Image (cartoon, rainbow over all chains, first blue to last red; front, side):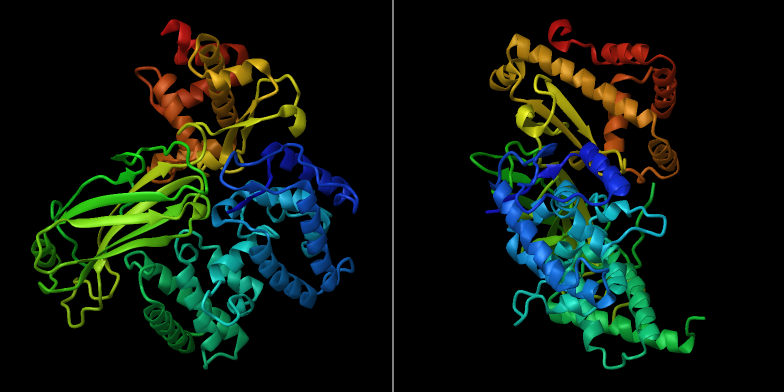
Length: 261
Length: 312
């Protein structure tokens, strides 16, 4: 049964985000139960998470962040490790059904009430001192500090693999963004996303970083064109793998003939 | 209006005759536009029949008569947009019996509204076809889709009973209308929520006796309040106006389940004069909202025939 999480109302999210920009993150103290003010739960359909459990979740996330360098300024290695470990943790430990995890306001609560400090560490303020709102407010789950990690883990979860999350660490943030930002076509098909990541991992012609990135992006365009009239969701993994690898080969061939300027 | 053009021949209209989706529960009824009482523990049992003129499909599309064809059904919730294939049925070569689809959609995957897409497609690669004839496995020859709203206590307005005292709201208030207008093209079900205060005796009573006189008057007042708020916010928001301009150029620019579509539907149904378009009505209402907010509210009351429970 799904655990139900508090959904932070949009007006409260706006207020807390404004406060974040004005005063920095103000997380609950170690002895304070997370506030449920201006947050609502789904009426039925699961067991509500309790404030004590939320406190436990906060402790776990802070611990994971500390293992990656928090509170010292995040390094590239630290950020990468954080994303990998927290993605697995969120997907395995929060008890979120996919339906509940698709609620923007749940992620808004987690970032703005429960662990604003951890999210601010992962995505520090810009040069002008302000934070990027979609990293905190759940306006775009492909960019939310925590929501994107859960989504990534869910889509890339390979049930039959020895390590079901092995695909989560194949691509870097930018490359994965390229795929998952295409929510209505490519990213809507978890099987296709997994095939794309497998093909990238297993491409024996790879090694040139810049060309590899171009190959990925070009092959995504080819796959988007195909998905307009091919149902890729009902294809077996072996067929998808074959299709995706074929598109990569075509992209690589085309880019070698006319490489990017 | 945008149209998808396939790079191959598709069947003529009439080659597929579809029966509506049926929702199987205690009774079997046509899938409604809103599924009452749904939550994550509710799986949806859906059935449907399709009558396919297989020979006609193959003839129209240029495919050999024994080409493997399949009917596939995929579903996606409006919130995550993640698609799941929930049925895959081969179309027999020689049978004229209708194709029966019988499937269970996992409730825990769902939220917001559910879109159910039915596809007729090639079951396997078909090598050696002529130009403009489908050849790849999965090539979509025909599709349709339906949507149904899941969350909320009504198809239009999601509502949640909440103790305002516990949630930090004004203790004696009747309701709070939560409206997320960050994106007007987001689905209404994810952006609009009415919180009903269970600490307010009138609201608590109305929740228990939804159809009696005082309750009806309360819901009428809520309805008027909601419509005033929703349309008022829309006409003051430049991003809504821009979206409406995009809609004028491309009627597919706004999803029918979006917040913007809801605003336009309300204006069309209640506030548009006989000789004006919805966009003209929105311009007029926006101007009035800025100049004379009280008159704007009075107009909305008139359009809704508030209070309906008395004037009906």
